[in-house]
Image 1 (cartoon, helix red, strand yellow):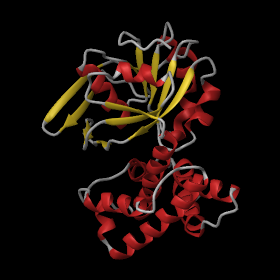
Image 2 (spheres, one colour):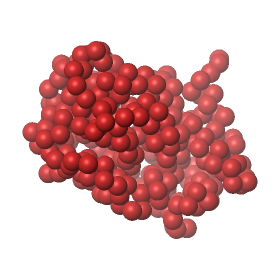
Image 3 (cartoon, helix red, strand yellow):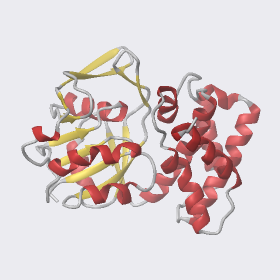
Image 4 (cartoon, helix red, strand yellow):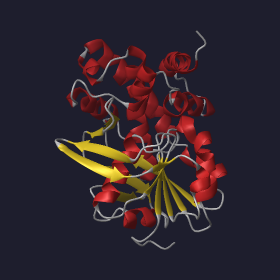
Length: 298
């Protein structure tokens, strides 16, 4: 796998995560090709008082692609993979690396069928970024990715070398992916209540969140994740220390009436738990509620 900084790079899905990574690349002189559903002449990232403008255009027709890209950063949500399949069909060649900037622990299973010619790798996205109603994406933390220790990861590492986006290549990737999933799973409570991080300061919500995180932790361990007993409290502490108005992508989708990533963030805990013969009583309540909030009817 050739890891050099001259690799042609495409970002598919220039939402909050895609815009952030595209801005990091642009700042370093590696402006990527932008592919999405909505035509725009540029993207904008707001970092504090600073605005980073990423020149476009955002392409909306896969027929506009004339050759494969060396690196495709797939930043669509899990609910949008099928819609992105046409982009992958034209962007992915035999030497391409597809890095999936997506929630969950099942990225490989979901994306590989749409990119059989390339090398697909998952990533854990650690930074909070939020799309704003006025257009710019607001960055609210340091930009960091974790990748599994495999040759294709070094293509991503080289492409992002010297940018604001730190890349960690680790042998402990499965445990990190499950830790992030625990964080995403408990954020589902925000979508159900239409409340932001400040809700975790309530004693009743904190107790529910901690019990749910412990249930998720048991499933994660059954799946082989090496995570300590302290992890649920650490995740709760992070939410409680966050700005009270901090949201999450699943809350943004609920507010906008879009389909929710309930299955890959929450349903997976129930599914994997059943496979191990484990009881998941909190998931058994939360998952149907999230599914109904996402899909209706009614």
